[in-house]
Length: 258
Length: 109
Image (cartoon, rainbow over all chains, first blue to last red; front, side, top):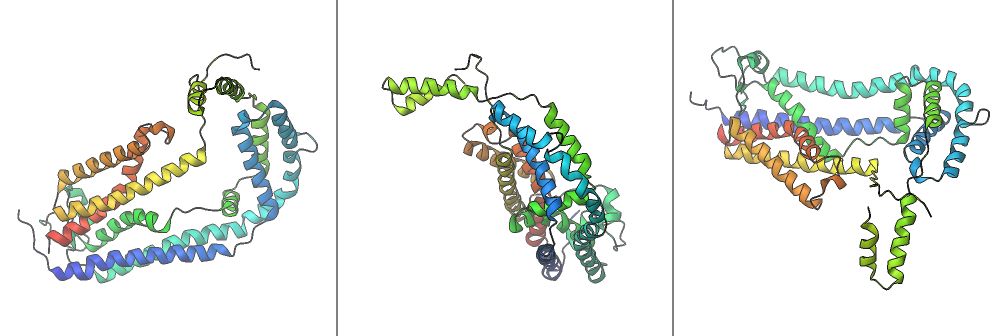
């Protein structure tokens, strides 16, 4: 079947404008999101507790680099029965965390979701309103007949090739495709620590439970000093250097064991 | 002096660096998806030829990334298949969009 010839005005006035409009809407939405997040207050106590949890996790992951004495000291700081960090603060902050988790955090999560949904719905409505009833383009790959209802909304020809799409399907193509472009242009969505904490709080993380689980993990950890090999390597290196070898050769000899 | 004589291989992985590498890798493959989409659309490749071109381009750029790692991708990434598969899945939607757009611009005018 020969390909349809379509009016080039459709290209100028439909395909490209929709893409450009969606791109700019995405950028505006991203900047508005950033502006709205800036004036969010940070709760010092909740932040401190969340940071303590993160620090304990980091201690658990990197305990191999610490000597036994150092690890025991840190463990005592966190887990001691009376004075340890994890046994104290939970009581104080718990009612506060619960109060906070309802009004403030809920509204912030809601606004973030809204900020994403509303522009997309508006754009979809705009596309649907202005550009219905005609073929907008052709996708270069074959599709089955099941996609006809989805891709050709508003075009009532049953015999038209499924690869010819309507404007709404072009909107969806743009929606999925421009995510990659936004990743390139706007950078990754790097949340700083405060936002990450507050997101965690909003997910219903109960401070007490988090403290209990981290404390248990630290208690159960069997500490093993991993860097003993450093001493042996240093010995080999120095021995070679003292006997007159060049630095690179000595280093290669020292590394050769590992 | 320590008495252990076992020569255990120490594998030290810094998760921040791994994440950064994965991010850079993603950027490379997304850029590739845009360029590949434009090229496929302008050349008028359809159906399987277009997808084959996308796969070939991804493999080629994957090879370039591995070459940049000094042919030891395990030093920089979690695994070599992750390098290509993650990159390809990130770029697929973008590729389809630009492929369709430029195919329409160049061949349905």
